[in-house]
Image (cartoon, rainbow, N blue to C red):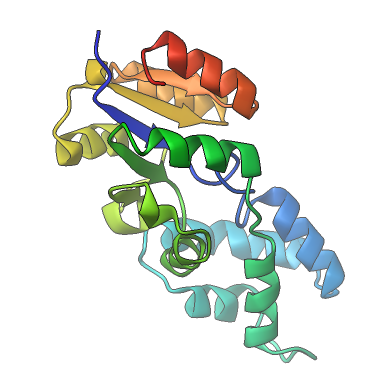
Length: 199
């Protein structure tokens, strides 16, 4: 067995989650939003945001700025972006492995936030391409997204490993024949990747 490509989730592995449940709850409270109203609006809008069919500005118009606010879209967007922080040990491991292995992102994220995170943390310095939901029009854990990423990277499923913090996403990778490591911490990840010959 030879692993020819390593696919990384970004939120929850290389960086903190960008706009997940915890981040949303924190900003809803900080900005004094109606949590129930926001949750309903978010539920309808986020699949379109993450599939790249809606911009962040359009998403914010629908979920928050559908009514006058005491703060601006720019202020809210800056607070959203500030939620993104590095997972320092995992990021260092990925940068190191990127010197010896072909590596790609395979993640769910809206275009604006994804591009902010790539730029801010230099993810394109070690990831060769970003097979992100906003570009592919698919969302994990849809097996079609993994198959498309494999096709674009020109590797067979058994030659690839997916790193993800969510069990369902790791299971979906295995369902198409990929190896998968469920990320818990950098030390565990390093050990499991080494067992696959990725070191």
